[in-house]
Length: 386
Image 1 (cartoon, rainbow, N blue to C red):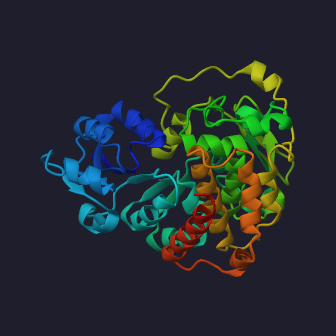
Image 2 (cartoon, rainbow, N blue to C red; image 1 turned 45 degrees about the vertical axis):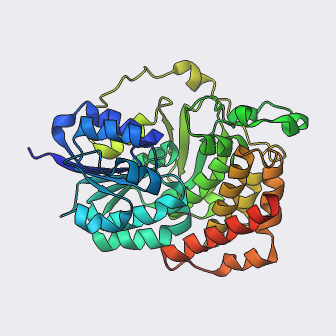
């Protein structure tokens, strides 16, 4: 049997590392065509050596120049403009795990080079799904979502039409501040906001979990991926992160999807789909199933959830505006330029700016429009608070 050719965009991030770990247990069946990073070259070079990768991309110019002449028998590039050169023919699988809007262009460019793409980059699905879905169809590339919630939903929708979906509930842990009184939100420090109760994640996504903006993003993703209206999607708090989604159908059945708090489970299944999981699996946790304790989120503590009422059902650049404003504010919070409580306040004042409301009616036609708007938003907010 020939080896599966794969590529990992963002191999040094948490998703990329999990995938590398999975492949490492089955190296004989894979040929790694490409690994990429922004600046974590130390980890990348270890991965290259262990997986015998043929090509690497280091997008940080300084890091690229530092290692350019230090490695042999590996092609090294500084950007994604050479994908046509790297991929001689379609590979079997590409994982798109570059975080932020920076991952949008590489995701789009890689679709034509693979038979199957697993997308962990939220921004691609939120900001450019109308563009990506056309590219997927054009190139007959299979798509699988990687987020635990969306993979859970996707896994129960096989051979079922989306018209049969009556309601989908996406669960959230509530982050580190779900029990914290609102009166103490002004005292929240960066070190507190990046302590997720159940998952090990990067700083940015941990803050999104603390504000519950990550669930807003996941609702938008689900709306796009499964072609649903917002009124069919709800958020529920489940503190244990054991139940990932509930899908209620109009023929009387509801599916509850549970799995351990490990991203390796959805990642593994995007890679294999039909093979026994090669990691350790716990028994079904009957105690957690007996006491799911599902709750509605507190909108006074987590006001960013209210943005879902303002987003049009049709595709628009408004989603890019939302992502860009949030990303910039999280960066400012992590840099200690603004308080945690200020994130939601500044967020709503910015998206209600008359200069930005027009984007509700503008449909994105290409990736450049999205990147351009992101830069405009970033520049405008930073000019006020730096």
